[in-house]
Image: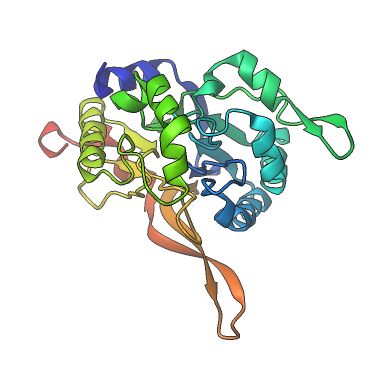
Length: 304
């Protein structure tokens, strides 16, 4: 099944979220929260993630996790991930209980497509110290795709993880998961990447991105995704393909923000100040740009 067909399917079945120019959204993906073992790449950025997410919570953003939030291929027992990153989940919980969390699943947390799995592992949390159960993300309903639709202009933005149509990580995900869990996971701890992933495979990544652009051109809609771990913000005249990047590069997290009817690409980074203290700073890499500039409906066929 090719990318175009899969994207058509998830667009038709997507959760629809209406927004306007007063709405605020932040999109992050590919946190790959693990169990704090050597292969858990999120560990080094946990504090940076907490700081950035707390900023978005304090400023009334809705947090959209665009897939692969939890590394369930390497560690399918969610209790170990929750224990490893308890503080990060405490911030995520605040978004959820104020109805400002939208969780998409990708290939590495595809188990979230099964309601029984979500209810068993995400609704409650077992505190081993107190030996008691607590509400965790009770009632959360992860989705494969999201469509943001502007209340006034009716501009539509499709949000997906981006693995759709990537054969090894979509149709053959179960086999790929087994190879990662029982083989590549151990090499992963030494920095060796799985060739089935588009992260280090330039040809594969470009092929996936070309398929994204083909869908955008045919459907005249803006697309936000993750999966490739390479952030992307289109230049003027390019098709509106946006990529959040990821949360696992050393001391760096990237995100897409929508606020005030504008969109921008940002990067959170830890760096030393003049006094030698490590501080967190947010850089705007591209934008802010009016969303209307990426509304393909108003572009003629010859320029699309």
